[in-house]
Length: 109
Image (cartoon, rainbow, N blue to C red; front, top):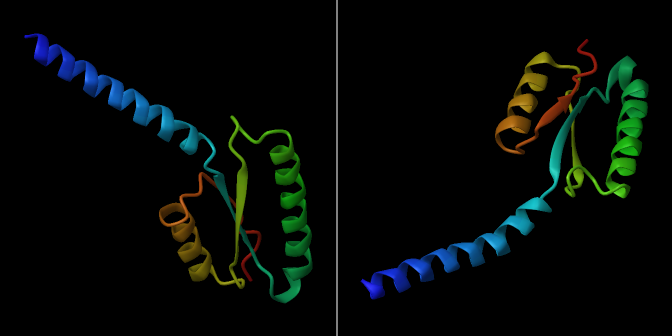
């Protein structure tokens, strides 16, 4: 019975060691926020200002330590003013980029 207890304790200690190593690494992983804007056509000027404003705000939050110690990462895509492209990029942000939030799309013409 003593052998089982030592083995069980060894497993618990190993799990705690791994958790102590993995959790801080995860805590530093960036929080991804998507930005879908139209950089072509009549709204392109607005898109540049919207992107700049988002970057300024995210830089301020990151300089203050991020959110819960995690920095924010902006993932920016151009919708080209096409609804089907915007939908595709939205899915990409959610499924591949693992964005927790999406700003936009700003306009579709």
